[in-house]
Image 1 (spheres, rainbow, N blue to C red):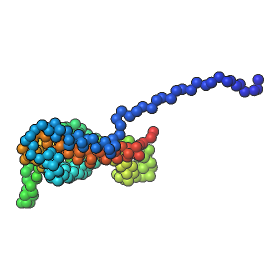
Image 2 (image 1 turned 30 degrees about the vertical axis):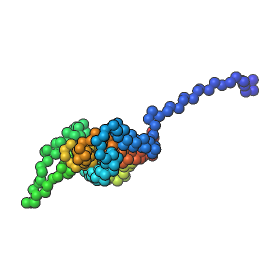
Image 3 (image 1 turned 135 degrees about the vertical axis):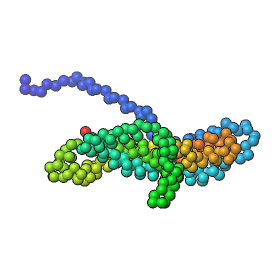
Image 4 (image 1 turned 90 degrees about the horizontal axis):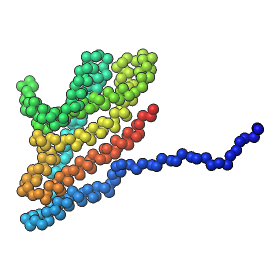
Length: 281
């Protein structure tokens, strides 16, 4: 009776769940090659039967590429400037949503929700037509060019989204951080600036970078209001070439590649940061 009970019957193990393949595979560097070929060669093949083409499409694109690159750099200047203005204003607005004062919280929440749910193009038009052409300050007239108004218009939705990023990051920290700071006689301001916000940086960085990538792609909206960025210069280049239809795909494909090459590494680095700073539990 004291002997251990043994059996030779096999034990049925639960079958392993098959590994699911990713729905969308990760893009590799060599994936850009067919994209370049498709954008640059599809249109010339489609219009090869025309005999009035004076210069090959690729040669025309190479001629205009430096100008288009300058326009793209201007897009990046607009994106960086709008991100800087929106981040500064959004951080203040986000802290306003966390204020102990109920009126400040409600006003900050209302401003955040309004600009966060407003179309970016509509905000851009409002900035273009509501801001004056120039302002006078102590007898000095300061002009407000279109690109400056575009920065202000694009910074408004950025401000609202950064406000939500700040609010969400602060609320995601465990309440024990506040309780520990109170036990050490820290004031609310000291707790926020010395303890809470430094811990929130790694939580805010991935969504902040994702927002910047979206903003960069949205800078082409400035072409609608007359800012001389890459899309505006592309249209002018096509018009100067007589509106040749075989140039549409190469030119706009080149613009697409510029944004892809710039934004895709940001997106991949954002995913890496999300995995690195993932909160467990």
